[in-house]
Image (cartoon, rainbow, N blue to C red):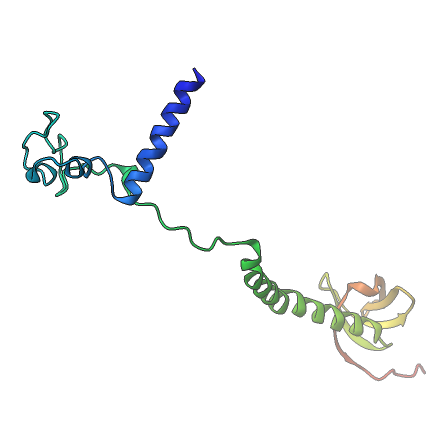
Length: 173
């Protein structure tokens, strides 16, 4: 059983080599000394009694085109993963300059703003609450959110989203 598979594979390999070099089945009768018109599709019988035209032939050589009959593309330079390295580095630079760097810069500005909070500054929290800074502690800020009732609120320093300006502190009399 393995001998028959080996023979089939050997036949396929030789037929592939013949097709690649141009010595396919249509060229064989012309090389064996058949009639001159037989290889060109004249229909004259060869020495074996067969005509040189393949049945259903549609091309000038007398052979039909099969999907696998194209000549193989000559092997060129194969691509390697290193060929894509400049492309990947370029994409990483684009991501860095358009996404990571601006967010890092904004985060640094926000930390600087929160570190520079002073008493009397008008601020807005991340939740949208407006108030005036009364006291700044380690991680907390005490805000006065209503002038009439003197309501106070404690928020985390990280909750301060924007500083509008500082008012001079008025002395209590």
